[in-house]
Amino acid sequence: MAKYERVLTKDNYYENIDWLTEVLKEKNLNKHETYTAQLLVEENFMQLLKLENKDTEQKVDISIRQTFGAIDIILAAPGEVYSPFENFDEKCLEENAEEFASLSIINSYKSKLTISRKNNKNIVSIRAHTPSLGQTRTMLLGVFSGLILGMILRETVSDPVYLTWIEQNLLNPIQTMLLHALILVSAPLIFFSILSGICNISDTAALGKIGIKLMLISLPKLAFYVALGLGVGHFLGQIDVIAQWVGTDSSVPNQGVSIRDMIVNIVPNDLVTPFYTNNILQMLFMAFVFGILLVKAGPWAVWAKDGIAFFTRFFEEVIGWIIPFIPLLAMVSMMKVTLYTGLESVLPFVKIIAAAVVGSLLSILISGMLVGIVGRISPIPFIGKAFRFIPMPFSLCDSIACIPATMRFCMAKLGMEEKFTKFCVPVGMQLNMDGTAYYVAIVSIMLAKGAGLDIDIEFIVSFFFALFLISLTGLGIIAMPSIYAAFGIPQFAVALMIGIEPILDMFGTVQNVTGNITTSFLVARKANAVDKDIYHKSNKRSN
Image 1 (cartoon, rainbow, N blue to C red):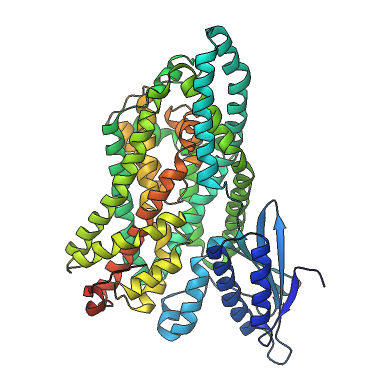
Image 2: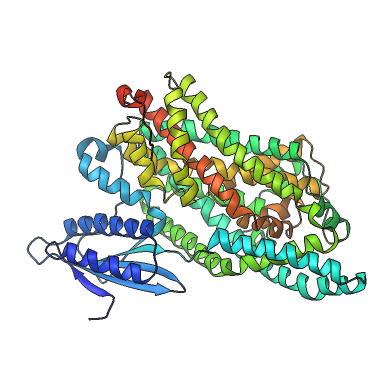
């Protein structure tokens, strides 16, 4: 048997979990990744055993596969068709709380799972590790290297002709190639992510009254943070270096956007042109319409939903191949920033980071207001405990990875009943990307102002709806080139912001998780599923 293959049974389960832990340690996975992998192996293993023939030996083949730095754990077992996402509903919550708890964990990590069937076997692929950028550290290294190299060139190369040659023959080609690679992937990624998001929202609504309440609280709150981000970005003003670049680049259009034109032109005359011309607004329209039709199609369209999930995962994988080169893009972009203007051009980036910090803290206070007004309970315990909890999402920098800790916090510190916590927190995460929506909106409106666009009411309304739809996917700045192009913002502007996104994402994750906790708490509170004694109890630690 191969080094990374085993047969998993109830009798040797713990022995093989120890083996799995050692292999993942050998692969340099951190403690949280290892814990998540163990958790998903356990829950899927138990579910797969239930589907096997009871008259035969019950076993599950387990193997570990590494591809381009990504590490997957593969579980394979014969039996009836495995459909954990279809069985996760309010009926399950009422009939079998233990089964529901298991399925809620599996659904929490839906993005890490790929379930298929081959040769009468259920195949479960668990993504244990996605190659990261070493993210914050590597990106910041690229940013600061670019700033320093740009300043050195500016001070040592006195002739502007040579500086222009360096920019046009060295920096611009690298930046253009990497941006083209991003644009190539971002449009289809957005299209399939929107489709997947609509299907997920419909699944949430299908979960009954609790799911509908989640939507009614989450979506208006998400829209509020998009609007707040636009307002904050408008207040902070333009990014001057964008204005300077646009002024010297005749290829960048200075176009206005009207609601009438957007409505008239948003309907494509065929299915190919939106992708061929990279018309992101038409893609969004198609994704929205197709998503609604898929929802109405019912059970016979399950295969199409599986296809959407596949393509979403596929393009995420493609983005994963591009990501290691993003620090180089950040370095080149920062070199161009300081090549002519010096360090004073960095000030807007400091403003954006400061706005993200303030936004993450403000979100806790806004959540406290919602708890007091909508939940009709004192917000003081909520605010105090939330402030003590935020180091967890800040350090993890991943909203999905924070779900287990979030569920423990909701039950142990806020007094939410277990069945509501294990339902609301996993399901609500996709709907509560408040922080991502907030900082992307700030960056986007500042770039639009820097590009010299007419920021009138029609532009704001059109921009708002585009950003709101994108917010449902949870995608950040890296997926925005196509959106920006549709509104006349130069696509190379994304290259400037990518360097600071890991920092923004830390505070954005805090805001995302806070929003999810708030929504889950309000739903539980409306259902009288909050223990007031636990909620009002003072705690020195909340994580």
